[in-house]
Length: 178
Image (cartoon, rainbow, N blue to C red):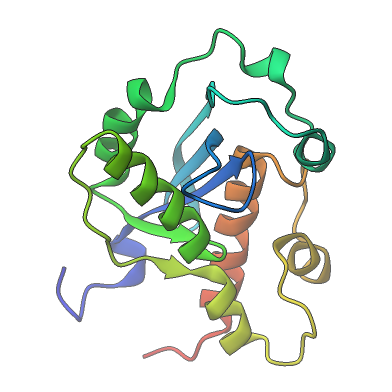
């Protein structure tokens, strides 16, 4: 990609993960959602529930509503991770609080011996802090509400990826044209 490539010509992948907790070493990914988009047009979506192979703590279930029964019999991370990384690879990734999601992907790849180098990612949280300095909170659901983004179910991967995509588009529209 060259510096003069128009943003509308770049393919992005807004993604989100739901996990069993906050520690990428101890906890596991249990849902992934991806929205492939170019400009403001959604090209493709992907959503997977994943069997984390560990119990989902009750307090975490209350946040995203994903229970052990919902992931029983679903593919394990090792079964979908290579395809997920291939699916993401031709696009510029966008994630809200990207370091969190990337740390889980990196841990999952490392644990399974899958090559995965950290890639440049657009962090929609950092972008929002730059573009909307008047806001006092930068949680994805708060930003969606303030910006009038149609919110689906918070803390579900595909819904949050869609909100991330919409937030990215609103933030880019607010940047000065160069």
